[in-house]
Image (cartoon, rainbow, N blue to C red; front, side, top):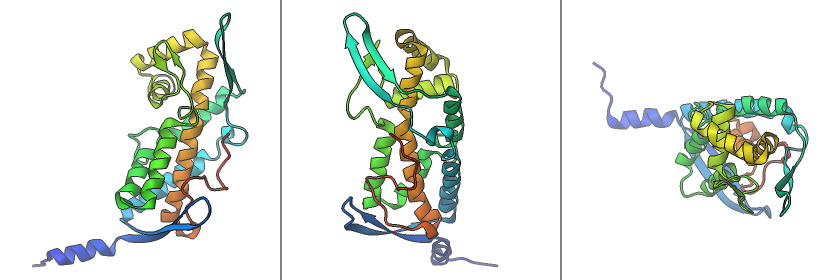
Amino acid sequence: MLHCTDSAIEFALASKMITRTLKATSEDGATREEVTLSFSETDVQLLEHYLTNCDRLKEARLLKGEFPRIKNITWTAEAGLSFTLSEFSYGDVCELLHLARPIFLSREPVSFEKATATIGRQAKGTAIAQHLKFLRSTYERGDYQPYFQVTVGGVPLFEDETLKRWLNGVEYHQDKEKAEIVKDLESSLTKEVARGIFVSQLSGRVRAALMLGHLASLIARPEANKALQPTSPPAAEPRLS
């Protein structure tokens, strides 16, 4: 009869752990911290799967040029609130959302949230944890919310919850309650303007997702192991304006 002691079990589990040492650097290039993290094979497989989805996302046509953005917001007594938006193809948006689906939807097996949590469990109290906090903030708050807010009919336009209402009410799950809120916004702004505002807010999500992919590559693909720069995306990532 085979017996296995607790110490033997611990040794067996430890032997399957994969260790990575990362260097966290500040913007000026000075090394802040050298961090050694240990991951299970399952963790690394999840991060590799997340990377595969990032590689697919990078092929989206919408990322090949200037990302849709809000150029100007004005208000006059005569016309009221007015947005000037850059032009884009809705077909390109649909392609982007399709490729981003396994990353954007939190219940997907290798979503942004699950990949972040996988790294975060091993990085508590380190500079890597601070980097993950920055990525989560960029993902949820985007490029506009930190600087201003516009409310229409009691609904804040530049809010992660409002963006998710559009994603889940119109583009992904077609949730009726969320779709009604989006419909009200479209009635106030026009469908084209409302869509443009939502699409422009995807820039933060996409950038944070790809920056997380860069971090995941240092763990799952050690040949790409370069110094981590917490506050700026790697140069190889698509530029999002």
